[in-house]
Every structure is written in structure tokens, then in C-alpha cells.
Length: 384
Image 1 (spheres, rainbow, N blue to C red):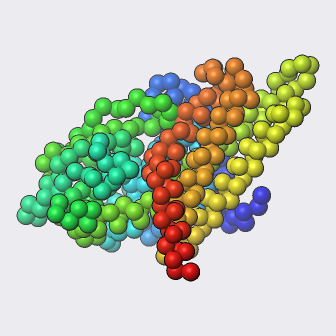
Image 2: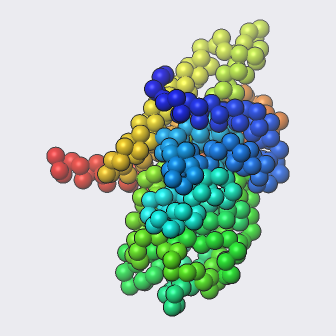
Image 3: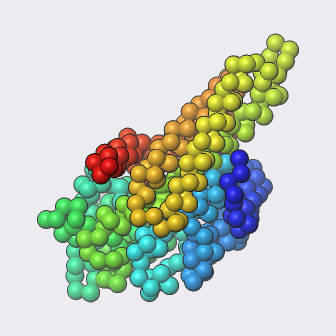
């Protein structure tokens, strides 16, 4: 299907595809097994300027937007969703600065991120605050010209590897969710520490750690926006980043489908390729159709976000929900097409299934996405 991409978008897509095929694909099994963070791939991405595709030219980027971010994330995830997450997780940590940073903050942090010199991470989730983000307990207390941060963030993508952390913390407990604020914290700041690296079902080449604040003193200049804007920062960030999660899921689905159709053409049973069996043909047809439908939704949503549309929460939730559900179904079907071989780690398809699952969970579970979508639908029906 022709999505009428610009010349620059085609260039970004093709570059990401080449890196995925030439550099990432040969290393995917190695990093999945070792569970190491794929710094060698981050250096390749850095050298190709891909980290800057969604950052304005004024700060060293290429001036693209969410659409360009989705194109690159999809192609990288087609080879390995975990390695791609080092890139996509940095975008998640960067968007609060892009959206709410002042000029000084943007000039200080964005150029190094755009060049790939520094990775970023976003810190909101806690042990008691997952889907219920309003229950965060990490605090930021004003102390002269500084804030003192105390608390622990959990399951932070790029945790320990990133140099720049955007953090949501409570500055006024009495105000509940309206008492949260957003801050920039640099790695190396006294009082900032990291917990153990989590051992995960999938996306094993991505670092997931606790981020721990113990009287972590940061200058007041590091607040994003104003006190009390923390959840606005977080929700607007998710509106921009959820199409990226959808693109990751889309790429994982496409990668699994590519393996499945290639295997179906080569696998001989009853004297003929299994691709000649109608049951397999119907599975492949459904997989391809679902992937294309997800792609259309993801691209349309990304373009809507880039247009500056006032409200995109419903559409971003739809894209994340649908693409991640498609990724899970397609990867499970791909394993089925491989049969017993699909269950063996000697073949790459089972990794795609393991990597797909998290896309239904992080940045808001798909149950929460349905809540978001329904809430907006009901509001819209009341207006009409």
C-alpha cells in the first residue's frame, strides 16, 4: 500500500531498514541470550543520525516528527524489538523536554540526544503506581534553589544506561494528581542510583531497572513547565509516544510474518510446501491484512499528532491498542505455522512472540487504552 511518504521519510525508512537487516538481525539472538544492552547498535544508530529524526533542526535534529519516529521504530523492530527500544525509549524520555522544556533546557539537552551521545528515559511507574499513575509516591521537596527527590521508580526502560531522566514526582501531596511535577535529572547526580537489571520474558536486550532517588538534589531550573504540571506533561508525552509503541508492535508483527511466509514456502509436508495448504494460506492472509490495517491506523495517527491537532489521546490509544493486539496474534500464528520448530529457540520466531507481549502492557495496558478510548467516545457523543 502506498502511504505517500515524502522523500525524507522514504530515506529514513530505507536507512532504518538497512541497519536492521545488516547490523541488528545478525546480532538479535546473541543479545537475546546474553541480555546485554546493545551498545554497539546504539553507536550505529548514533552514527546514522537516526536519534535526531524527530528533534527540531534548531537543536541538531532532522526536523521530523512522530511520523518519522514511527517509520524508524517500525523498521528497527522488524529485526529486533529490544534493540529498537533503546532508540524508542530515548524518544519517550525526550518528549517531555520537547513539549514542555524552556529554551535553555532544550539547548542544553536536545543536541546531545539528537546526536546519540546521550540516551534518555522516562520515569513515572512505581510499585504501587502502574495503571493507577495517580498513586505515585516519589516526592520532590523544595529546598532553597533546589529540589530534593526521594522515591523509587520501577521498570524504567533504558534505566542505568540513559544519561538524561525525565521524572514525575509529587511536589504537593494535598493536591493529589494535580500536585505532581516533572523534572530533568542527569545521571551522575548525587542521590541517583539504580536497582538490579530485570530478567524479562522478552525485549531482553533492553535495559529495565529501578531508578532510585535518595535526597537527590537537583537545581530548580530542572523543573519542566511549572509545579503541578507533572501529569499534564506525562499524558501529553504518552499522546506523542504511544504511536511509537504501536510502531514497535507493528514492526515485530511484520518481522514475524516475514519469517512465517518464508518458512511456509520452504517447509515440505505431504510432498508439497505447506504454503499450498488452504489452512496456512488463510492464516497468512489474515496476518497480512491485520498488519496492513494496523499500519494504516498508526501512520494516520502519527500524521494527526504532527498536524498539531488539539486532542489526539483517543487516536493514540487506538493505535497502541490495535497494533499491539495484532502483534500478539500475528506472532502466535507465526509460531503455529512453524509448528514444533517454532517453539525451539534455534529459530527466531519465538523471540518475536516474547517481544510482542510487552507492547500490550507498557505505556498503559490495553485495558487502560480501552478506558481512554471509551471515555472520549462518551464525551463526543454527549456533544453531538
